[in-house]
Image (cartoon, rainbow, N blue to C red):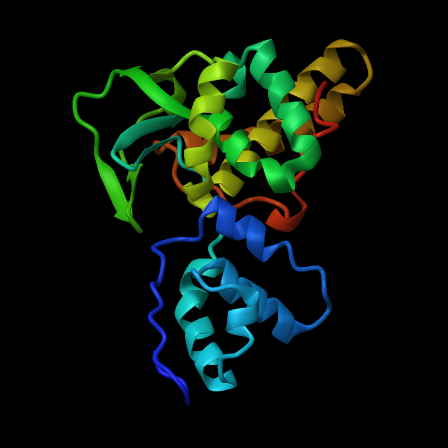
Length: 248
């Protein structure tokens, strides 16, 4: 891409990474132009000061190039192949107390801990029951496309170990942001379902209210675990994801 003074060598990333997403949301100003500069800097090797020297035409051209990757909806996928390794989402039903506590603590500063949360929610698959794995391929990420009744019954992820997570978490700065955000949304819906059960069992919720909430949450979850964990876009704005306060 060329401006009035020089030619810019800019690499368009395949997807918006967790770290790029964080950097984009570091901007606290009110200027839309300033937000654009900050976003372009986050997705390139250039600094904010360098981007400020570009012509407006060049900046707009590049912003249009980035539009397709910076406006992803959140997507939940149960099994993905990323950077040559098979990862599976760790469902709340099999969560240990340790990983739940770590999630809760890390979520107190979700903005700076997204990569650490990603390393908890997605862990290497140690075994699965699929004869063959069918994938949909998008932006250097392979997403499971097998059709099964409940995908969580078909695979096992690595047992949670905080030390292993700490060794792996830095690499998750490059994890696809839209997939993490979908996983967080799915996690929150799962927690709501569990909370509904517990409140009902403690007599703190009427049977009618429980049935209504259970039906709503079950429909949301079943739509996404039945087809191998396809798209999951029922979620709040990714700018305001918080996990704290979700424990039963």
